[in-house]
Amino acid sequence: KAIVSNIHGTTRDAIEDTVNLGGINFRFIDTAGIRETNDEIENLGIERTFQKLAQAEIVLWIIDATTACKQLEELSGKVFSYREGKQFILVFNKTDLLHEHQKEELISALLHYTNENTSYIFISAKQHIGTDELQQMLINLTHLPIVTQNDIIVTNVRHYEALTHALESIRRVQEGLQTNIFGDLLSQDIQECIFYLGEIVGKVTNEIVLENIFGKFCIGK
Ligand SMILES: Nc1nc2c(ncn2[C@@H]2O[C@H](COP(=O)(O)OP(=O)(O)OP(=O)(O)O)[C@@H](O)[C@H]2O)c(=O)[nH]1
Ligand SMILES: [Mg+2]
Image (cartoon, rainbow, N blue to C red; front, side, top):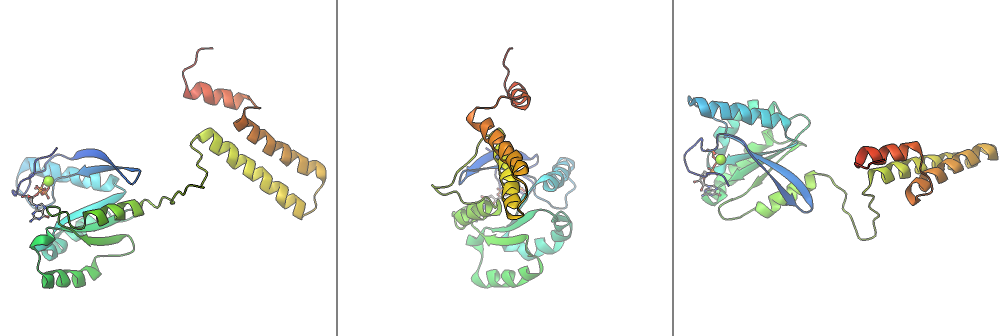
């Protein structure tokens, strides 16, 4: 979709698209590379890079592995000022051009740059090396629980809310039983639990449910 060339400053405006990886939708934003330049348009693009950097949850900092140490020294101060509350992956690309000793040097230099929210990976986009691992890193960073066949998934927000309320009431019943409180008080919580479960199985149509339905769907009265 985008122009690729060996001329620095090829990407100027940010380009966005969504990609589904392992069932999770990721919005990728490709931005202008950060560097010192006198080109006015490119500088506007770089400004936009920092705006997008501020908005992102996960930052893939793509670094040409053959000049990585220099880039990290020059740019990490500014780029890492955006690190708080985000996950960073330093992606060292073009490793097909990298000698083993260069890679080792880089790994030892990396001790200064990584932390619990910053990891790194060596890839070659051209030769598709490390790209599957990178995808897996992205999926892992979303911290979504792994869903197995026997898990129950609630896809409706109204159901989720009703189940949460039902659980709260049933917990109160449990606590009440442990502290031997009066049956009248217990029955109130049991009633409440039944009420919320009824919202799901269709026995209750109270104002809130109707409001919810009319709020979500355009239904004529
Ligand atoms: N050898 C090698 N070359 C690569 C690899 N990945 C990209 N390139 C080349 O690097 C050059 C730059 O690629 P781009 O995708 O335009 O790089 P960019 O980082 O987006 O650059 P800007 O948009 O200018 O910031 C192109 O000539 C690519 O073919 C790789 O893994 N190995
Ligand atoms: Mg580009």
